[in-house]
Length: 248
Image (cartoon, rainbow, N blue to C red):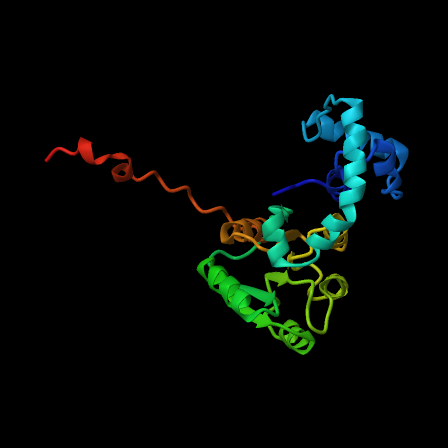
């Protein structure tokens, strides 16, 4: 969950342990040199960046290994759910929003997902959070659902769809008069740095990669919609008693 600015978020996503500051700055041409220096100092002061000491020979070796592994890692990151699970990494980003909404009002969400089982899974969990959920799996269904009242309070958007591209849909949503302010969370198997940057720079409020845990998705949804986190449950006093401690 983050309240970082788009430039701060882009800076941190670009940090991979091998790029120099000059290389990172070159990849952010819209940020001036003074603004870049201020950005770096601010992140360092908040301990979101910390310097490390490393053996130069080890760095050189690691750089060589990174270059060899890069094409393989990018291919794996784009190959879907099974490879992400084997690689053991995921992305979970959410920009907090404070949206004024009437108390007790019904929330509406549109889930754009072409895998039926996953769509129903997401629908069930959002229903527990108080959402009325509409589903869309292709271009015609997306157009139909986006045209129906009421305007949704949330859009969960897959990237890889049978006849549409999620990034293109995001761009159109942000240009649409009625939908431009609706929180959008990208929900996709595309976990490369370029894909995350494209989604967040394109106006997404959150980015979650598949496979994901239900609570991770709900945590992002609450943040971008402005819902309070559920109260923490007190520990069960019965669960801490072992069988030898009971007295009747």
